[in-house]
Image 1 (cartoon, helix red, strand yellow):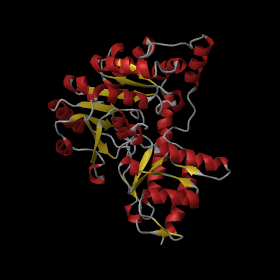
Image 2 (cartoon, rainbow, N blue to C red):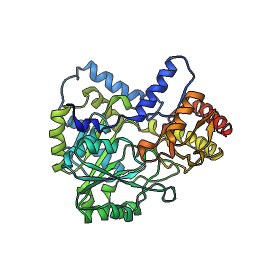
Image 3 (cartoon, rainbow, N blue to C red):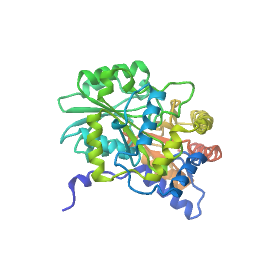
Image 4 (cartoon, helix red, strand yellow):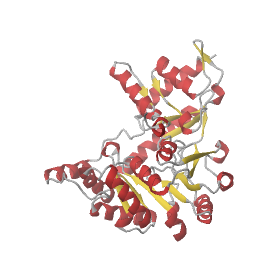
Length: 396
């Protein structure tokens, strides 16, 4: 008999839809894909040059499981300069992408049956990772009126003697919303009072718009610092998705456990990518600024277009590169005899009829929302939105 735990794990619908769209493109169809969770920009030249230099110097062997010291020191400096956080290299674990970092974190803190509060909408992998670590995901739904951000009152309702941790994602995937200092202070006080860990996913921290500020919850005070496991990486900010480098910053006690786990599961992250990451986080940052400027243009265009369409509504994202769209007004509408009852229906019809790939958000906790990524060119965004608008106008 195969693993009953493995049978409870769902595949990633975002990767499935992206793969399906790419397959249709390979077959010659003009598919517009709004599913991308990665920037369409190339990795900056100075980062690629550092990787080439590492190869030429023969830096292609095993490294310590938790990462090379120069990279961990660079991460410590980044956390100090960007976030006002003081860590030493022993508190840093470098992994094969932020997904790996998250998995290590859950495995390090959870025992069988421990509960993890996950505010919805959430990145679809969080509940699956918790289950892989023998934990129980507890989903707390938020509303558009609260900007899809969880309140302490909601956290209190979800709390019981099995609660072990809270997941916090700011800026958020899929909403792009950011927690304010006051909101974070309330959550931090709640976590400390109830001896809970906070898994703080900050992977989109550099992709911010309209002068909003990213604040790491770990920076608020010493007590929450000890209970926070920061998740970050270079995939989004430096267009390095395929390089697979993520990292955690935590107490030494938790970091030691994550190091032990990783030493048996994956050993070290790619040695060449580690060298490239040093160049990314310690080198010139203009490449990030240029991406943010372009993402803001795309965000503004997409939001304005969607707001002008029938049946759709959204709030303007403050960070990341996604628009989270309420499609509930579409339910019961038909297209060529096909009824739209949920986001999955809409996604299937749009791909089949209009060659537009969107992400239905059932796996993000909302079957009445979709996610559109603006990590694709403005030209592609315009063409894809034209098709969606035309489709909406033909509904009965």
